[in-house]
Structure formats: structure tokens, C-alpha cells
Image (cartoon, rainbow, N blue to C red; front, side, top):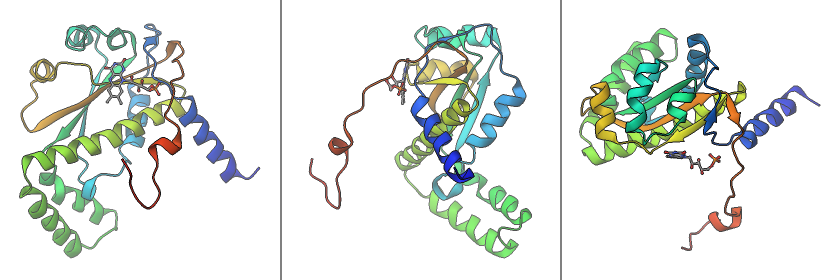
Length: 215
Ligand SMILES: Cc1cc2nc3c(=O)[nH]c(=O)nc-3n(C[C@H](O)[C@H](O)[C@H](O)COP(=O)(O)O)c2cc1C
């Protein structure tokens, strides 16, 4: 088997083996270094104009987890997993366009002139958008990063569960999050104590249309 085919099969297995896990081994810790490695892979996700609106709060401190628990409807995975990662979306991500293109220039991906022009185009284009559109973008990009994070974790033998079940206002209050940021989801990360159950999917034919759409 070629190395490429083996890698493809391993990736397919990661996708197929991922299930939401809600019971974690509370004694299992994941080092900060390994959490950073997972996040480093997650941030390779695509984003609208590469503005990377995602921000993370990595919650490992038992006291902070305990405060988050009731806000997340007492879902035990908040406290039992090794870390809960809150994914936020920056509603003013265009403010980072210049910095992003400076990194691109430093890496030799663009010239200073092209980088500056592209940064200006992003800033001008996005800063004039309605708030609702900026929120859509932050949530879409936040979803992409969340999925990538969960697969990166699974590839390392860890489990996750995404959580939308939390009180956004209380969450924002707990962490002093300003109106600039929108909570996307919480993701518990850890070692399963009980494997996640397989879940059913609608058949592909029920969700896929070719070349036209019939509701
Ligand atoms: C945006 C989002 C929010 C979710 N919120 C919760 C949640 O609050 N609590 C929970 O236990 N599972 C939550 N889930 C997990 C789903 O129930 C789960 O992904 C779905 O049943 C499919 O199962 P699977 O992840 O094992 O494939 C959420 C999933 C998504 C994508």
C-alpha cells in the first residue's frame, strides 16, 4: 500500500471513529503542549478572506470549570474532560487584516505592496458589512475551526463533544467577553471513559442534489 493511500485510510478512520463522547476519565490530563499542538492544526482551517475570526478560551482550571458547569446546564463533560475549549468568533476580524498580511509578507507569500493592498481591500470590504453578515461569517468560520479541532483531537486518540447548550449571556459575563465576540460553541476534550454511541445519518441521497435543488 502506498504511503498516500495509507494516510487517506487513516484519515477516513479518524472521521468514521469520531463520535460525541459525554463520559470522560476525570483523572486524565492532556498537557498544555499537546492542547497547543491540536490548536495549531485546528487554526489551519480555512476562513472568509483568511481573516481567522476564531478565538479560543482553553479551560483546564477545576475552579473555572466548576463555574462554567451550571452555565452549560450541568453537562458533566465540562468538569470531567481534560479541557473545555470555548470557541469564539470575532465580529471585527477585519481589524487584523493588516497584521495577517504582515505575517504573509514575512513568510514570503506576498510582497509588501500586494499585502498592503489586499489588507486594505479586506478592511474596507468587511468593515462596511452589516452586523448580521459579520456574525454569519464568524459562526461559519467558527464551525469550520471547531470541526478541524475535533478531528485533530481524534487523530491523537482523544475524544470531544461540541456543545451549544450553554447560556451565552452568563458565559460572556463569566469571562468578561465584550460585544465584539460571539460564542460559537464549547468543545470538551479528553479521554473517553465510555465510548460515544454511533448515531444515524440520513442517507446521502436524501441530502444531496445534483445540478439542481428540489426541496
Ligand atoms: C452545534 C452543536 C451543538 C451541540 N450541542 C450539544 C450539547 O450541548 N450537548 C451535547 O451533549 N451534545 C451536543 N452536540 C452533539 C450532537 O448531539 C452530536 O454531534 C450529534 O448527535 C451527532 O453525534 P456524533 O457527534 O456522535 O456524530 C452538539 C453538536 C453540535 C454540532
